[in-house]
Image 1 (cartoon, one colour):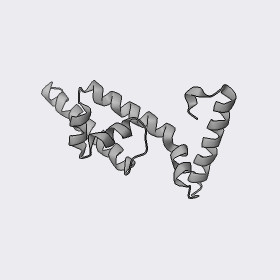
Image 2 (tube, one colour):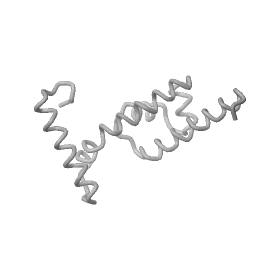
Image 3 (tube, helix red, strand yellow):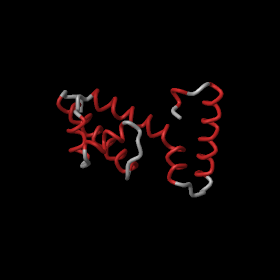
Image 4 (cartoon, one colour):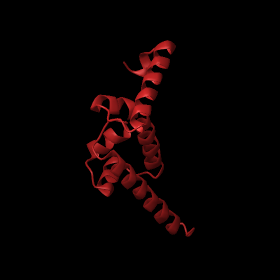
Length: 113
């Protein structure tokens, strides 16, 4: 069930369930794959959305960003959409570094650095 089709009561229950899963994970308990995805998917969606916005602000295409990071465009699309991908933390770090390099280059070209 997606959060878009939930009643307020269902949404509160789902958020409480996700919080319990996150608490279990923080306590060092190993979660099943489905539990891990459920516990993290909202964070992944927010991270992906923010990085996508930054990429678009810098006028970098999805394909170009994927090439710069060294992954397939389809993987980057899934990452930006908050879907589970292998090595998500590494992709997030590489994405942030790529955006930082672009920012520094643009600042240098503008004579700011």
